[in-house]
Length: 431
RNA sequence: GGAGAGGUGGCCGAGUGGUCGAAGGCAACGGUUUGCUAAACCGUCGUAGGUUAACGCCUACCGAGGGUUCGAAUCCCUCCCUCUCCGCCA
Image (cartoon, protein in one colour):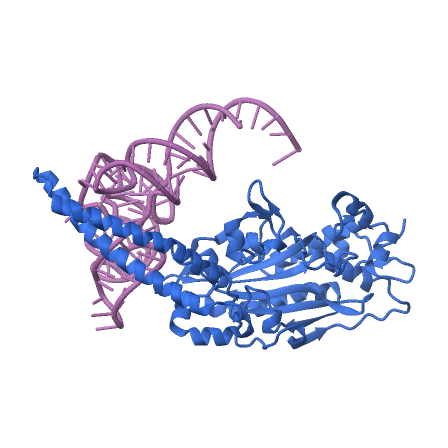
């Protein structure tokens, strides 16, 4: 019998539903709690009954075996009872499958429980700013948006990309392509060499089970690009691939924490964001992102979240980009997250901070779905905690760099740390 | 895509239609012995669900799903995956 797959622990609901619901707050509004409770009870009733009958049947079968060996004739009484039990078991089992399926469907729809330090709120207005780093760059001229800058420098080509693939795609060209590549390499080197992450290059296509494990499915299928012929999905973030590296594994305690970094393209349908950020690199169907993922013991995950955030901030600080950090409120967090920090970079042309990284602790939410456990030295296996953060989204970093370091003549200075990755080039200018 | 082989516990590796949840070995853990290490010896040593205050007990699982049978890891079917060879290809 399959175990009940869940994202929040069914036992927690069974034993302290009130507390679970209270902590979910607004996030638990849509859940049909009565049905969950009912299905759980039904399932347990059926399972208990089936197991009792199976036990009885097993005993009888053993007796038949002994009699056969002794050469005794068949006992019709026993045979009849065995048959009856089989029918009853079959009948009850037929009820278990749909019960479990419905229960799992309901449980998979329940978002994660926010951590107690998460501010309560319904939208971004309740997010809490933690800190700012740097200052708004002082320009003696009015800053050009990255789209105009990129096109006049002939490093970004949105028109030709649209011709071949539609809107929300781009062709990077010349120093633009090189800048993108330089950023990827700089971030990967920083995280692997200074911050202790192991680089991986994972699959960009993932199956249904993988997407369910990290929480994209079943609820957010409409946000994903899907390949029907093979039932595979293009990853919306490397988080999916990396977290699934250890799906259905029991890790040794000494192996934790595990830290991975990957640069991958990310593919998002952006359904429902029509009209939002239609121009430029901000919101693309395909973009590169360097992603950090950690697997930790439960008691260490919140320290790890702070560490992850620090690693992400280091990237922005070394690039010299002005940013701020906010703790997301309960209503603004993603489905799977227990706590999230957003890192927002200053975009001079728009004059606003825009998200460039999101760092989350999923606690055991993904681990439970993906069945990722570890074995403590003393006791029973436990679910690990998973975390991830963008370190950083490359396209948006390009935007920030172009706009922040632009010069009045339309050229763009290359940040010091990137120069080695740009072959010593110190600015991008018109040719 | 074509042909063949195979999928058993952390690993290796037996296995027969009926006390097989599964021999044996390795690894791991605990202990005895030991100046230390090693060796040797003894013991423990899968996952999940149900039940119990707890010790424990019960059930399921030998790639997945069906079928045959009183009974299946063992026989049959379908699917998935891995490996080898051929073809194709970056």
